[in-house]
Image (cartoon, rainbow, N blue to C red; front, side, top):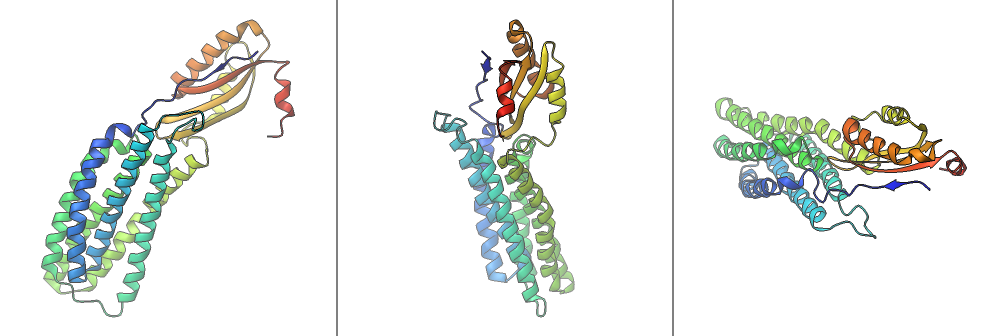
Length: 304
């Protein structure tokens, strides 16, 4: 009879400790988004409209990220939801990427429409709004920078703030050019540049989110090396049905069948394998089935 050992999933993911910072960034973003949107509509500035739209996705994205964290934190795993709602954070990150794609596409379409006859955009109101937006984004950027390295969910909000911060700087440049030269195409060019700049970063965020949702192995983990080192544990004859996936940021999960020819070594093999996964590969949550060569035959009869 095999030993099936499962560690408990941590009740709080990597992003849970950044709830306060996300809430503050949300409040700042919402306030200054309204300012930029009002000035953009009043002046007809495409660059400022683009930046305000990015800030809107910041507000929506951070709100989704915050909601996902609170949902995952307050809804514990149960027999019907064995992993709780930790994946809600990943879905929020993917939704953020979709929002950014949409905003970038809108700005590009609007720029093409204005190309033949750029509107006269007053530089002073745009400049003032750009300064306010840049200050707000710098504060939010500093609030979320540390969390972005630990959580995919926080990283989604962080990338939006980063894109918006660069966008606010672009608004300042376009306003300065308009004021000093009267070249109204500057506003349109900067608006397009903001949209194009964010696309590759959005692609990376969407790609990482989809890898988790499709339960691919973590990008930084060599699963073949995991199998080889488990097979090298004394007493192990074979390792099969090895699966490694990410539940949400900072929470890697593994399961495997380990075959041994010595039934009396099961406990030692289980402890050694658990220690190896935790210390060498940082996988704390692992479900391992220790089998003898006789009971392992059933695995070869399975169709998948």
